Amino acid sequence: MDINAVKSSYKAWAPIYDKTFGAITMVGRKRAIQHINARQGKVLEVGVGTGLSLKHYQPHLQITGIDVSTHMLAKARKKVSKRGLTHVEGIMEMDARAMTLPDNHFDTVVAMYLVSVVPDPEMVIAEMARVCKPGGQVLIVNHFAREKGALSVVEKAFAPFASKIGWHSDFSIHRILGEDDLDVQDQCKLPPMGMFTLLRMEKQDDNRPLN
Image (cartoon, rainbow, N blue to C red):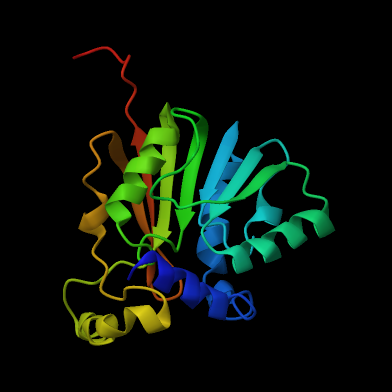
C-alpha cells in the first residue's frame, strides 16, 4: 500500500474514525498512555490521526504529534484548540518514513495502530529509533498476524484488500523487530480478544558500559 493509498484511505475514514475504529482501539491507546504518563519528558506520537489520544496525556509531558493525513490532522488540531491542551507542543503533517525531527530528541516515541498501515514499516521503526533518546522507549500498539489457528486464515483472506480497508490484516511482528538500536522489553496482548499487542522497546545507550 503506497502513501497515496494511505492518504486516500484516511481521507475516507476521517469523518467517522473516532466512532468506529477509534472506539475499538481505545483500550489499547489508554494502556499505552497509562505507561507513558508514568514517565517524564518529551513524547512523539507517530500517526496521531484525529488526536484521539491527546486528551489522555498528563500535562507534565510535552507532546508532539505527526501524521501524513491532512484531513485527520485538521480534526486533531480542533481537539487541541477546543480542549486547551497546552501540553501539546505541535501537530505536524509529516511522512513517518522521513521525519524532519532531530536525532535523540524524544524520551518516548509511540505509534498506535500505525505500522500495519504505512508503506515501508521498517523505515518508520528506524526513524522512531533515530529520534528517540538513548535509554528512551519506543512503544508500538498494533494488530499482528497470528501464525496459526482459524483467525490466521481469516487474516490471510483479507490481506488482498489492504488498500480498501486501510491496513494489512496479515502483518507480521517480525517486520518491526529488526532495528539494531531497539531492545524488546515487554510484549502483552490487549482487548478485544487479544487482537492487539503492546510492544515496548528501549533504545540502546551507546555510552553504557561493556560487560
